[in-house]
Length: 135
Ligand code: AMP
Image (cartoon, rainbow, N blue to C red; front, top):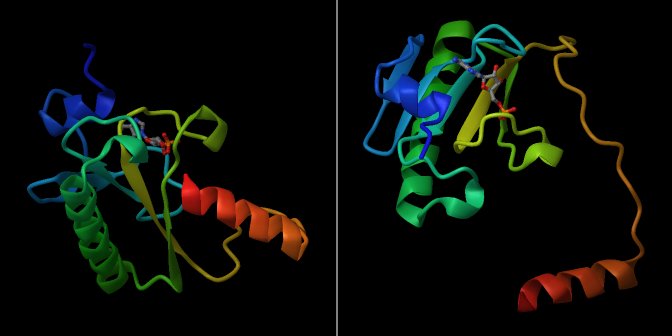
């Protein structure tokens, strides 16, 4: 199987600006950041998406997300931080190796745009939740 670009970074075959690592994950600066300090936390096991991670790998990865977010907060003092994670091309994923974005935000930076909220009636929401509960 072909190694992902993130596996090559973890294995030291491609350079990165490393921030931290733990048993399950590795963190470095995003090369095309949305804001100053935009970091990635990448799972060490190269599952492509959220659906592929074990509970332990996911918990360990999210522990490193929390640690790196704290390091960013202490260092850069942003007004807020977005934690984002894309699964699938339709969701904007471009590197198919599980990773979490940590994006420090400053008031008025307009660095990200979010969704326009839709409206579903209560019966539709009830039916949808029922489908999800039994899935
Ligand atoms: P996603 O769209 O969620 O798959 O995000 C992939 C992210 O990886 C993008 O924000 C890229 O800028 C970032 N990226 C891709 N290659 C590298 C690299 N060699 N070093 C650091 N970040 C990278």
